[in-house]
Image 1 (cartoon, one colour):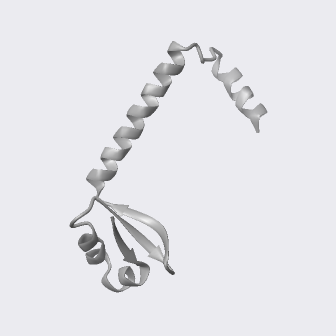
Image 2 (cartoon, rainbow, N blue to C red; image 1 turned 90 degrees about the horizontal axis):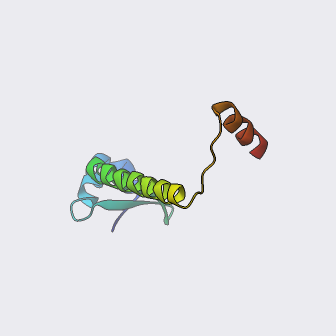
Length: 85
């Protein structure tokens, strides 16, 4: 994975990101020598979000199949959430 120092990003702007992403789908932005951010193109981001949503649906279906659910009214649900705080 490519790395972009924050100073290079300040000087070169978007072209520094484009250069870093030429050979990789993600690049790390380092600030004062420490990895701080990850940048990626929007297509890769959309793919990751899709994977995340598929995993959430899979987890919800597994919870439903295992009986790990609560049936309640919206009002009761909000009361339960308020009690958790």
